[in-house]
Length: 93
Image (tube, rainbow, N blue to C red):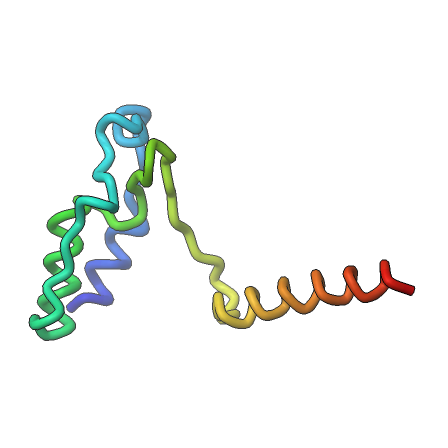
């Protein structure tokens, strides 16, 4: 069920009003009840966000999207850190 819901949310076209920062939920106001089962937590988050792919944080609009390439965020972050370390090491020599 949750997979179908997220697929439907990803297909939503945003209008200018949807992306107006004044109309977006501030993620700092979202509450996660850790005692709920996972499916209920997800539904609770969606109900609080209205759309979990578009929200704000401290006055900054955040719009989340994902590439369809099966590469995890963890892997990309690791590659980013390694590239920064390589540049740092190269600058020492």
